[in-house]
Image 1 (cartoon, rainbow, N blue to C red):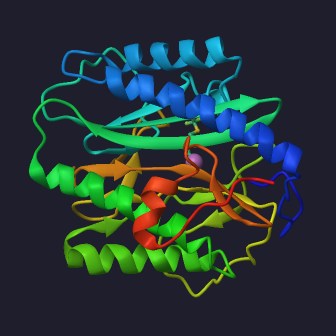
Image 2: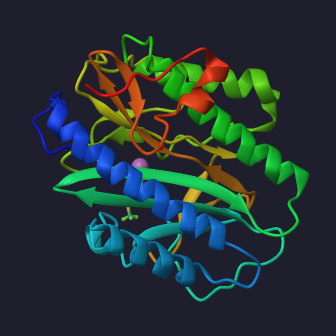
Length: 276
Ligand code: MF3
Ligand code: CO
């Protein structure tokens, strides 16, 4: 949903990007703690409590908690859960694949980021799925450095997944990336696949959450009776990685990575530019 009129995309000032980066760094550190704690025998509710504590200590608030009534500060989506899994007392088991998706607000400005972890002994197929999803996310972010339209991000992700993995992995189409700024979900939608809709022009001042969701099987999803948890129809596992990224006059900067994405973007020949 957009906070602006049709086709209007919020353009951030340097001061607003500074607050988004603050939110992004707090979020990154809180995700570090939740990811490090994710282990066999630990419940997803415990991860939520740890994450919430980090935000509070750092002076940020949660954009997830209370969002359309959402009851936690992170989403924890385990195995066949694709996205929006609600933390609960379920203890993680050996080999579980869990995506931890969190957000933070500083001074009214939002950040949103997700990582997938595998606890205990990883099935090599799960490891491949998570690594491919992460790399596809970075490929999409790298495309932002040169793209003239938002649709080129989806082209890059789609081509990368096809070339890297052939037909064995699917890209979820029911959920997409999004604009972010004074709200968590804003225009434009950022598709993770090739589309005839080329999307709006990328312009300095825009911020986008890039978040591919990849599956080992079919891309059909359904929502459980809790009205949040999205699972694959075929029960196959899904992975999810996400970063919030700024486009500014000198280039791009990943707001939810301490190095702006430098280490991971190098493989795609992209050097992030510090915010003005
Ligand atoms: N990061 C999630 C997304 O972009 C937001 C989850 S909203 C919540 O889809 F309410 F579930 F927290
Ligand atoms: Co998001």
